[in-house]
Image (cartoon, rainbow, N blue to C red; front, side, top):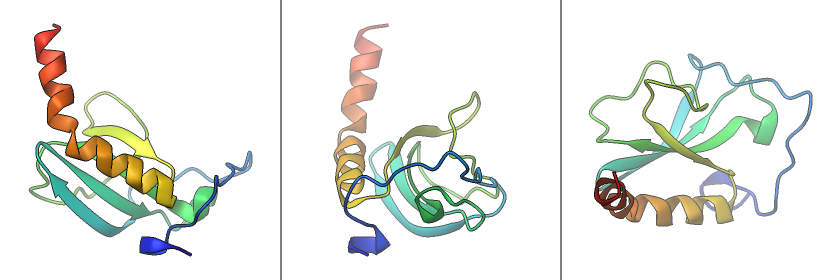
Length: 110
C-alpha cells in the first residue's frame, strides 16, 4: 500500500466485481478546493479496486451525503472518478485545483 492506502500500478477491473452499494461506504479522507472537493471512499461490499474510489464532487461539502453513488447520473454532484492509485490521486488533485478554470471555460463557451 502506498500513500493514503493507495496502490501503485494500474489495478485491473474484475468482470465479476460487485457494484458499490451507495448506502454503505466509509469516507477515508476529504480534500476541499475552490468550488469542489475530493473524497476518498471505501465501499466494503465492492470488490473492484478493493472497494476504494476517488471521487471529485462539485460544490462545497456542507454535509457528508448519506447515499453516495460513485456512478454518473442526473441530479448528482459527482464530476469525475479516478483510479485509486497514486497516479489517480495526483490527477484528481490537479483537476480539483483547476476546477474553477473548467467552470470559467464552460461559462465562456455556452
